Length: 190
Image (cartoon, rainbow, N blue to C red):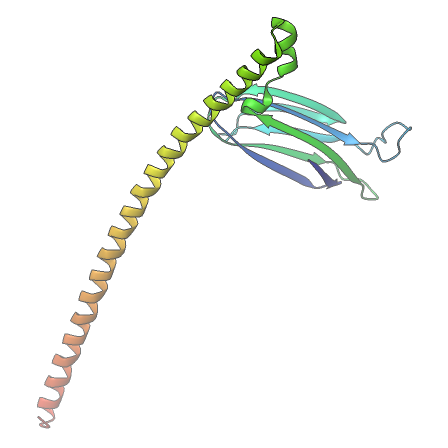
């Protein structure tokens, strides 16, 4: 993914990562003047943090960087990029690649290390993909149960509120009739 970042601004990107999933990220500032060194104004601060605020990576005044970690908890992990304020303002283009789960594994190294056949590598990829899908299905089932429970609670609350509103309206109507009746009796119109 490529995006632009103005000096003095912040850009944050979130990724929903499951617990115990491996994550790999790489970012680099694209040089606006190819063939020349990157200007000093093209430096950023990059920080990766967990849903609970734990910092997994911090790069200060860097042109590029990488991070790798295994998620301790599930949730939205956030990567924020800050650019210091420059005069005149500068726009930087950042190339950012963030992979997690099965996509984060380096399959070429697996093939080199184990000297395994191509089919075995493909089978390992497929096995990891199936395992990830299986875990995702259990996760989605759990979320579905939570949503169904929330839906039932909301329906129950709405029914109670509706019944309460009806009783309140009937009570107010009864009080109005009683008040009008006593008013007209006092005025001797009834």
